[in-house]
Image 1 (cartoon, rainbow, N blue to C red):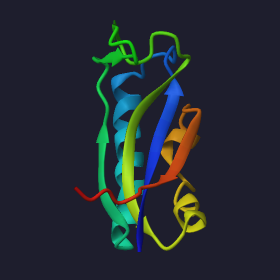
Image 2: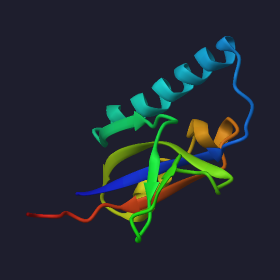
Image 3: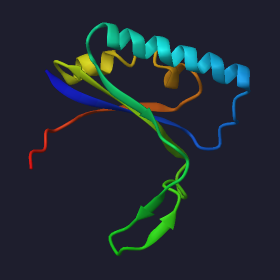
Image 4: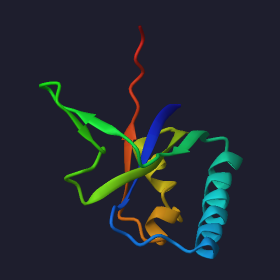
Length: 114
């Protein structure tokens, strides 16, 4: 079984949800992730914060990871699947795709041994 990462992208200028909308979103995420976990495919997840810096190849440090971008990566989920197609199938019902986000990028994770 291989590991895959889902990167959740959204519009950085999307309006902030109300507290009620935020609670509904939390429940949607819990249900969706719980479904993946119930199948034994869940590895881990996190929401990314809004503070960050970007370092380019010349060593120049810029404030914010997304100053020139229209999309931000809001979080990620790591899961186990037999194939990329299977991993992509778990995006069905993803709150990013049903709640105002823009895309879910699914990538394989290549083991890195040191």
